[in-house]
Amino acid sequence: DSGVTQTPKHLITATGQRVTLRCSPRSGDLSVYWYQQSLDQGLQFLIHYYNGEERAKGNILERFSAQQFPDLHSELNLSSLELGDSALYFCASSVRDGRADTQYFGPGTRLTVL
Amino acid sequence: QKEVEQDPGPLSVPEGAIVSLNCTYSNSAFQYFMWYRQYSRKGPELLMYTYSSGNKEDGRFTAQVDKSSKYISLFIRDSQPSDSATYLCAMSAGNYGQNFVFGPGTRLSVLP
Image 1 (cartoon, one colour):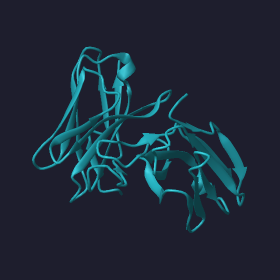
Image 2 (cartoon, chains in turn green, brown; image 1 turned 90 degrees about the vertical axis):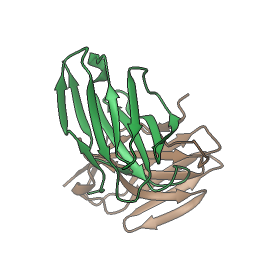
Image 3 (spheres, each protein chain N blue to C red; image 1 turned 30 degrees about the vertical axis):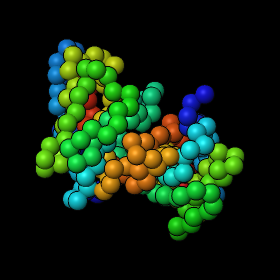
């Protein structure tokens, strides 16, 4: 158990809908990262927050957004969902701002868009 | 060319074999190198973390980094069926705002 929690574990929804994925980092970790993992794309970095502030963006679609709250938990919002958004979504946390820190991954949320 | 490439696999070996997993990269700024193990449908788990060139050993696992060749390896000695998983290499330049880049992963099966 990495200490990172994600909810829900599974999510099934329809195209065009909006969903929110939640992540709670390890106690004391200030950084939260979001990743998307699909069968043909590997692990793709989406976005990184440190202590409430956005630090870096990766391959995140405009339909996706995220935020980190004062209690350091983070939410990833996915809207206007498409079939291709079906994937595993992981969050990871680390102590610092990501410069040379190791990341600890949560168990993931499996999103299925029908 | 992708920033990080990994031997595609899948790889099947008999129990007890020595396994070599490899990644190459193109960004010479990478200084921090990691190997993660991911069991099916689970979150990646950090196995090894190394900085710059050289070797690092932890039990049956040895991570090797050759920055001059932009090549990293993970060796698993006395492989066990429980080692069957997907192995992901990851690396970072370590600068502010820089993030980790992951390889696509190599799926390993260790047969009893």
